[in-house]
Image 1 (spheres, rainbow, N blue to C red):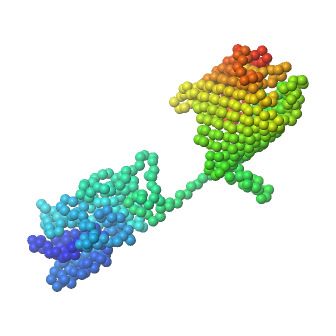
Image 2 (cartoon, rainbow, N blue to C red):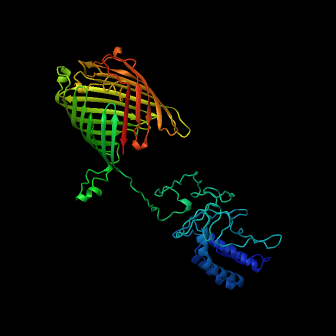
Image 3 (cartoon, rainbow, N blue to C red):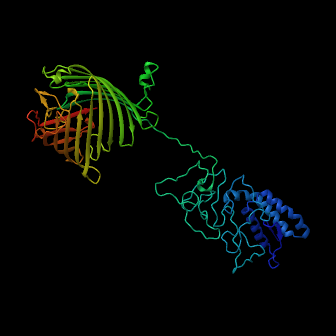
Length: 588
């Protein structure tokens, strides 16, 4: 006799097989049915117990013994078997999952077929007897509880178990094995022998060094390994140590254009203008820090130039936005050959970062320009500006910068378009276009030893009402080598008065000499002119070829030492020439 859970019937075994082994084989079939159909122990006991009395009345003693044995096995093993193996037919285990009704209830689909040869068959078809054991026709293998027959769909772990993905095909003792069944969408009758794939159920694993992309908060996304955890937020401890944001540096420079100067810089890149100190000790313990703003104070005393500046910048004006705000003040003094100039003023600028390389800046600047100690009296252009002059400037600047370094660039370009509208005691427009391009000619395999060709051009014009101190000037290391500072400018009565138009350019080739790129050589050609009016006078056009060296010393600062020799071959009669020019700096 055997009890069929599918039909709730006790079926007599063929008379040719009235052996005890056949009854135990029926018991195996009964137990596998109970686990596969996900009947609970209580329900199985109820279904078997309801038939015991009928079996006793019919004299089926062996069936009664088998049923009692099933009750004992179900009470001890079915719970563990359900946790370790999981249900069949692709259902996901959950304690709250309702038990499916029997197939004879109207409105529910029929269970899958159990025909011969089906890879998911869990027992013989209804009405067929179990084959008799023997040497030529062995019976079915005895069940191994805890390890289900293969193949099967991916089992789901119990709620209190943490899934451990298996990559070598071997599962730890007491742990379920994952990703061994067919992928979702494969019919149960199709054979499946795919290798283990580390990844979410039914999906291929990621490529090497790429993480799984899982969206835990998506209601439609499948959870990894075929189960839905109750807690989807994974706590992650991130240990970060804030770097140094403040800096105080002391340095100095010697320059053929600016003379000798010292430099003292106090900079804080995590400034907070609203965090005032509550007591004096707070000045060293967090005051004015924490908002990500920039603050810079610079003092540059020198024998020819003195510059003192304060600047505060909010890089994200409206939170994390591309707008920035900058406010600053300055005091500047410069001793020129023909007069001494002093500027005191303030500026406010709003920037907009269109792209990481493209920026737009608007600026409003107000300053008092004082001209003292004129070398010659009687020149109207100079006499009109002696004393204090109020000057206000509105500026719009568009810049596109793709250079790989601000000090020794080897690739990219810098394009600046600047328009100024000046008003106050003088009312005039001013426009400039500056373009520098850097071409990488060759380099070593490791990226060092770069040969760079540079082309630069400066164009500028200004209005008729431009005061003398706002004219364009040329000459010196930063504008045109081979001439003294401002020595390639228009002259009136031996006074360098500058001009309203400038066109300056340069070609330069730089190549490394040492393997560590510490020493580089340059060959260059500077050319251009500055004119009183907006025109090009070829009689005043200047050309100066030359060569030089660049020495990068990390201990002295980021800017290299520069030494150049230029030999003017075309120049004006009033120009002041100078073959050697240099700049040296030290920052600690």
